[in-house]
Image (tube, rainbow, N blue to C red; front, side, top):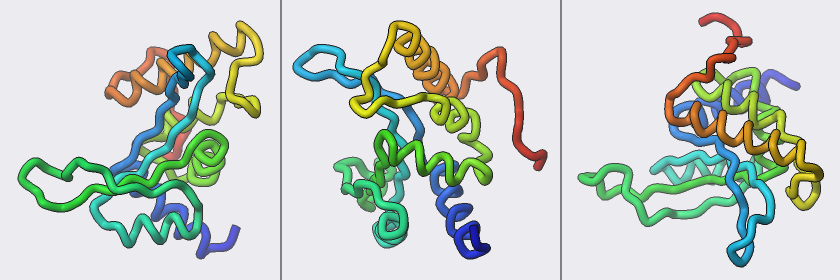
Length: 153
């Protein structure tokens, strides 16, 4: 990886660490469980910066109907990476993550089959455990087995 790519990926990481989200959602089709979906989302009020990131990494960019703050008139935009694209992004930026490093570490462990359905009962249970761990981390709760594998600041 060249220095310019590292700078860009660390820039993107700052947005995800500061204004992003990593989660695994249960997918439902017609009310029935149909698998799991990994999502990595970066939110921001600056459309141009998200368009730039999208031009380099892909993803789906939408304008939300939420405002940044209740008193703000700025529009909020979301750049979403789903499933294998989300995992690919997390693997690229993992060395630079600080705040959401634990969530990314767990998300990267999920082995997605092409249709994202668990391939066995063991895989189903594994995905549910990982989904719950990421959810707790997103709430600010640390799991008892948490270990820091990153560099000290």
